[in-house]
Length: 378
Image (cartoon, rainbow, N blue to C red; front, side, top):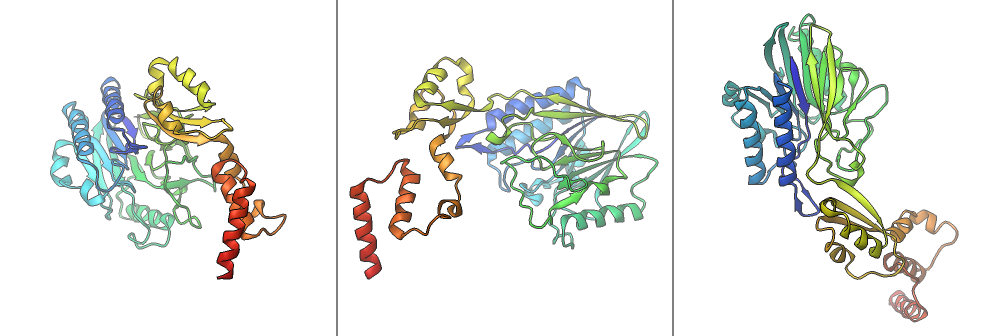
């Protein structure tokens, strides 16, 4: 049996007020083409289908079109909710839709939804385990929740060790204290490890299809994989090679995983230099100038509307970072004031320099000191 594993579609996401719907349509067309070319027997989406609980109408239409195309190809789809999704909304009509080959686990439930598909070697059992908060599952931590649920599945005899079993889930999975590599796009907050789930719980499964982390990577044992997001959603993901996992399940115990790369409509990249240098460079880049750009400006002098100016050559510019201020901002308050205790006027002068990128002149210092003195006397 051949599976396509992806996740973290985040349909409906915006990038600095730019709608990513065209980019997502472009990438979903590639996923559909891959499913056809690979002659996939099933298509797995491991959560974060939408970017937010109430997605915009065009995001719903795009997902509807994509899933309809997969089902028209005769490819069953197995889909779970992630932490960005509304479980109830995503799970609407799931009992009706599964008759068409669309298997959805929106809201968490026990026992887990189990879907069995057949191939030449016999049954393959898919267990759909959507994202759930520990408290909702009656546990203190995510690890405790996942461990208890999977242990119960085993005790009830629902996980047959003689058959091939696949888990689809959406959690922050670690292995022997090793955490997956994150990007800025992940909103997971790890407080005392309560979100961590140990990969050791997944031993009964031949393959574990995970969502939640945007960089494709294996975590722990060979059978536990994050397929990653098919698109880069933050500039910390610029170096990621986005892909989908093509998973082949042979006879029991025989699993191969290949990563099939994806090509975005617009790349996310960083461009560094002075305003003048980037204007010249952008004018020479042709279609690459339409990429989503984070511009790191090295100018020392004050700039007037740099993002508006750069948009003349980089129409999809998303962020401007002033290198000088970025360097200064890295200094913590503690570091800045470790040598001596500064007066209110001196603190304000420091703040002025950080924001303006230049020292406060004597006239402004005098006005500041007089104002502070007057306020403190009152």
